[in-house]
Each structure stands twice: as C-alpha cells, then as structure tokens.
Length: 225
Image (cartoon, rainbow, N blue to C red; front, side):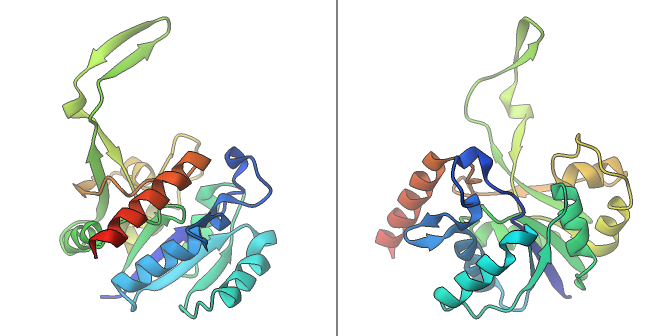
C-alpha cells in the first residue's frame, strides 16, 4: 500500500508578528518545517511527501533545503486562498492509496502516534489522533456558561489519515469555514472518524512561546538518548 502525506505550510504566520512565516522560524537553529519533514521521512522513507507553500515563498524554501543540505525527496505545491484549497491542490498531485494531512508546524508528532494511525488505516476509512483534556471546561452561551464533562470531549491533532477515495470525495464539496480540519470535512460527507491516541508533545506551533516549549521538549528528549 502506498502512502501520501501532505504537509500543510501555506500560512503566512501573522500571529507570530514577524516578516517570516512561522513554518520557517527556527527551533534549535533549524526551521520548523525541516524538523517536520525529517520526522516524517525518518518514520518511513517510502512516503510520498507533498508540501504546500505560499507561492511567493517556494524559492525561499528551496534555498533553505540547500542551506541545510536536505536531500529528502518531496513535491512542492503552491497553496491556495484557504487551507482547503491548498490541500485540494496537493491531492491532485498525490498518488497514495491513503492520504494523510499533517500541519507543517507540528514537528513533534511521535513515531508511536504515527504507528497507531497507520495500523488503524488498514481497517478504517478515516483516522485522527487525539489527546484527553486535563482542564475543567465550560460551554459559553451568550452571557451564561455551563460546566461540561471533559471526559466526553477530546482535542484533535494531525496527521489525519484517509483512504484515497474517501478524501477525494469529501473535497468535491464546496469550501465552508466550518470545516476546521479534514476530519470535519470527511465527516460531513457521511464518513465516521476513528480516533487513535496521539501524543501530548505534538503541539501546533502558532505563537513564540510554542517555539520555546518545542525547544524544551527536544532538549529533554535528547538527554534521554
């Protein structure tokens, strides 16, 4: 079975407040997206890897690959107006029997999580990793709010993995802002999502403090080896 994984890196990183998109900011002197690319390649070097990037930053990425001597084979696809359009562009360039979608700014997905995802892909059409909520939660309803059972709610991560035709059929639906991830899009098309355990370290880097957290995690892991 051939596997495709799409690394979405089409954002411009406005929340970071800098001129360089967040996927190119550095963790321990290496750009985030290179960390993510290497992690996926080290898990399985037979994956078809496709990276979506803002068109105006593709040449910058190619220069980074040369600078850091990265020879990992992958396709580069220009992103679209929204994440939905970027992934749709990448799907059109894919050839895998399964297609996974992973945030390019989640460099710390564990190989254990990836193993659980791809084991489940043998028997399920759509898989997403999750972690439990450890804080108390409340639902806001206008000016009021209500306590909720946190055991009935989980946090969803990426990569999310799908049978090829399942994802292709879902992406025939028009874009809607309510589709916050690929699982919600596929679910709206009538496919149930099978959940597997993720890993707490698999954070999405969206702010400067996340970089510090990621560096701390990597440094702690390095001392264990």
